[in-house]
Amino acid sequence: MSVTTKLRDILICFFGAIKKSKKSKYIFYHDIHSDVRFTDMSTPVDLFEKHIDIIRENNLEIVNTITKEEGQIAISFDDGWRGLLENIDIINKYQVPVTVFIISSYLGKQNYISENELKDLCVNPLVSIQSHTHTHPKLSSLSEVNLKLELSKSRKILQEICGTEISAICYPKGLFSEETIKRAEGVGYKTQYSSIPGAFYDEVFNNVKRRSLVQFASKKVFHSILKGGDNFLSFWYELKHIRK
Ligand SMILES: [Zn+2]
Image (cartoon, rainbow, N blue to C red; front, side, top):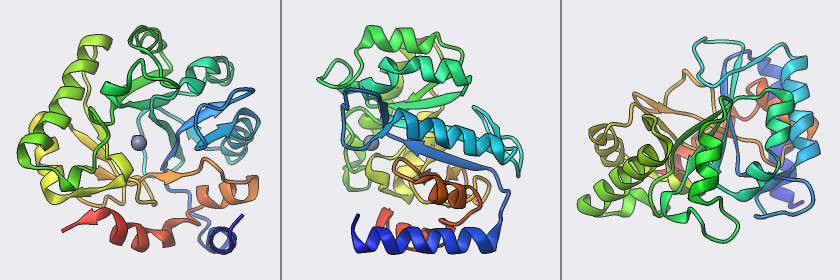
């Protein structure tokens, strides 16, 4: 563990102990794994299970859609890696609703789920599918034409495969601009997800939600993130992720 990560974790625990927030939060992972790991961003299944236990011990409700200012947690996975599919029994066993943000052009690529496997995921009542663009570009650096294409193509493809409305998008690498927000709204996305930590209802911009990355959080750090301990990182992420 690097010194920066260690210091960050110490501060998260410190601020979590002070804040003791109960505000609803959207948390995210990239994948889960038992034996085979498909990405180095993947979370071991036993750590994921510990996270679920901590959420429930804190009397927080795990929901697909957050509707209350306090007491709810929503869980998402980015990119569409294979591990979630191969360990879906964990999701079923714990009855945890999850949202998976899919990169539509990655379907069938090595280590990612295929189109047919996505069809299986779509019919699982615990799984909601949403868009993570078509090719995972830096949205804030694209031309208007390419931006529209990335936003609309993934939505169209995923709607055709799943037969459900794709109404949310999360930004690749967390990067976005005011132009991104406007275009995504124009294409039909009602909710947009950043990677800026904080409480769900403390929006970055109108309809742009915060999410907290928890994929490697130890039990102590995860507990502190649930209490709002990572909110102080927001300033840094806003500098890094929002392009003027
Ligand atoms: Zn991604």
